[in-house]
Image (cartoon, rainbow, N blue to C red; front, side, top):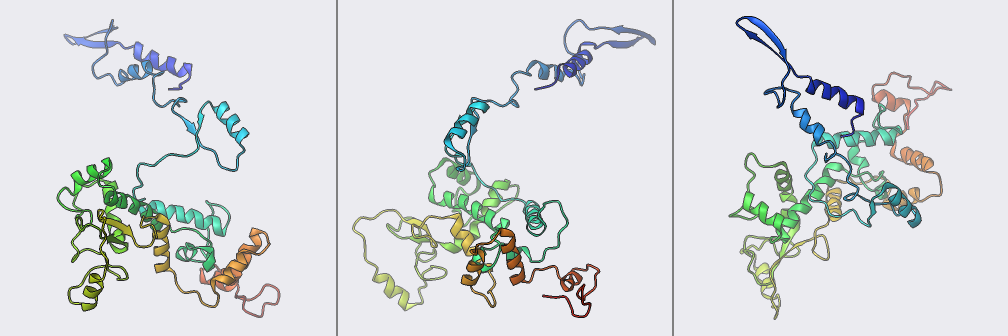
Length: 352
């Protein structure tokens, strides 16, 4: 386990120097040193097994199972040299992740606080005055923002991918396990979240509303859906068929029939190939939460970010355009005690 020899020697002295002191007819007898075996209830006895299995500890790095993945900015000779020095294999990709449960809100808030501090001050442990709310920062720079992502929304986009896999890959081992455990007699869309469920399953259930709103069925053999209750019609918000609308019935009757019929397929409405993507889902969230810009369009902001100037200058111009300069007027709004006039003339109000 990596302990130094002196520490192991001290522990072995404690373990091997066990002795008893007992009372016989109210007289003290001892010490008695045991010849072999472990003393029952001795708190140090289990440490013998740890010391014996020190070399077989799983905490030590197993170089035969370890791999290293390099950035594309590193040259190939440097990659091979580093892999040889570390004694591990060089791989091209990072492999597949087994799942992505939703992050706790407190974790998301802490990460956002660190990014806020880094953006406004340049460090992650400094006290900072947020001159703009995080919701306005978490958009692309085309809209005049910094390009940070909203972690809660982005994390939910990743979680919805797991729900999508349960729907589109029902024969996969993970899908069959979840169905047998949580919804054996119903579908994913109809499942009710009960009590004492795992954190992963509760996270996946949170994404059900997202998939219900932006998924629809592509009807082929009509074997997986009920056409009157489930979404499948293009161009409608809910995608469901209403028996009270004559136009829907006429358009349905005009749909050409296929000679070769395949199984019904669940598709994601925001992608041309019908497959779910985290990027498109986050784009939907962003468009639904983005407030309308006043005064400047996307082209104006693109020209600002594309000017040939140091990043610090671009940042300053962006703060000027967004009204995020630490003027005395704004400092007073954030309860910072200071004068409201300019430092030099002391006449006019120092504002934007």
